[in-house]
Image 1 (tube, rainbow, N blue to C red):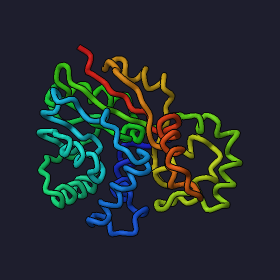
Image 2 (image 1 turned 45 degrees about the vertical axis):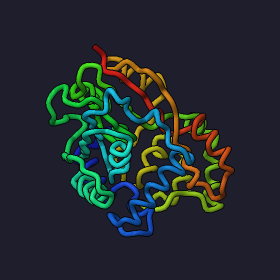
Image 3 (image 1 turned 30 degrees about the vertical axis):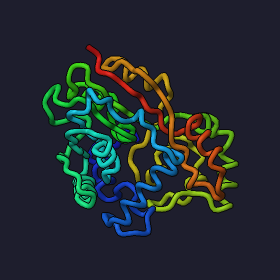
Length: 277
């Protein structure tokens, strides 16, 4: 991953928008968006949306959805009361998909193609930034955090999530043989060459491949690594976890177990932050 650039990242995601290949429906259709929303809620959040993700009313005026992908969070932010939402993404494909999505549901937002490492907005113009599962895909993750803080107003807030080195990733050198058993039983993820993900022995490659066989960059961080990156720019008010991809298993797990794993062994770490004075 060391030699990959933002150009490589843009090319991959232009060609492989989020959820493409996993859905049986045409990318950009209403069925595609509805299936994506269902999978996001039921798999990424084990069936219940976490209200901690959304900004407090005092910071709901001007919200940036940075790395909007196909617009899931853009829609949710608007539904949760954000007065003005700007959806931004590195790729034109994501912007076009977000525009289709908001039009289907009668929601008005602004859109802008942006590189999170060098955001093209003025200082201090947003009250809140939502950035979910984005900056672990870019060469300079810390530059993104610096830019998020820069575009926030005084006392502005952010909700940022990145891939987390949870217990399964930390123990993967010991568990990789169990992964091969899961693969033999039919485990894996559909689309973007991820069907054989459980055969990957190297944990860094496993993380990278989660978003596609040809995904150029995918990084996971420890809790302390994340806090160290955040601390120059933000006061961290809360950390929490979500996202245990039960859909990748070859068997169904009980809802109560999924919810437990989601909260205690999630693959995303979320930081509820406030800009440093």
